[in-house]
Image (cartoon, rainbow, N blue to C red; front, side):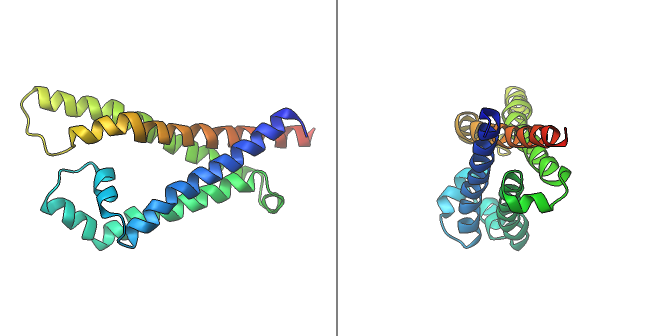
Length: 172
């Protein structure tokens, strides 16, 4: 096995693990466990609105169960680029899936601390009331969440690129 193929395989397994690790807390939160961690990850000011959001059935369905399911689907796309069962799929499907996940994670990792953080800073500087985003959350987003999402973006991107290259080499 060539070195680049081995790195692509390693990236695919790491990307799949990333998706599983990210899905786990969403499943736990959807089941009602670890509420303080959920509150921390939301970035909303504590209070009745936050509690209403956490207890909202639509938020649980789409925001927690949905994200967990998408993370597992992303893990499946990553694995499909290197596992034998993935060869039954059209080549473009897992490659496009992994590339799409990479783009979404990259946007999340760059947009929230950049655009949203700048907008929040601008509103605060102009005397607008706070309440939209917790400043502590913005700091944590910058040092914890954004690197986490960018790591996922790199892993899924490398997985997609490696699979695309492997498919191109196999076609020759």
